[in-house]
Image (cartoon, rainbow, N blue to C red; front, side):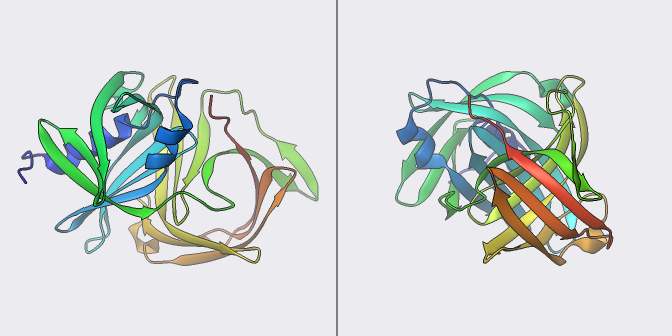
Length: 246
């Protein structure tokens, strides 16, 4: 298989485009077929793409050097053998934010194949996107002294957490101003009320890569209550709400 010279970055671009534009015309069959997490390893570089609730999050990083390479994503729809994307963030080129792009794709017994610059780029499935926490979540509040302090979920600036069945990526963005404010991600487990994240990339502080953090989590009236200690050791009690897949 032939790959473009700048394959890792082109690939990242392509797949995130594939997840960026959410339409009511998305068919359940097509959406379910690509839901979940997908991986591509190109030597020392890992590319992970999460499709969840009409949103795509792509990350690329180097585990051996603990270096972050790129993140991009947004809303998406699947239609007629194409993934249509509307970018909401791109750490390499913020001018792509707001743009729409289409990518041809196929699914076979080996995985997800996306056409990038006339080359077939193949991703292997990591999970199928099932799980109690799978989806697109936006932080909507915090508990302060036992009382809920609500956050403005209508503002352009937002903090999202995109989860498949085993992978997570959080991101802070402002699509209106094309600002990218931060990200991090890796793998997670959720069982018997215990939510554990293992950090695989964190541009702000690479010393935290490999760290595992466990929280006491639960779903209350459809909201995700997330409590414990941050990677800095600070107490937190966050409340997250699902973002509707329009």
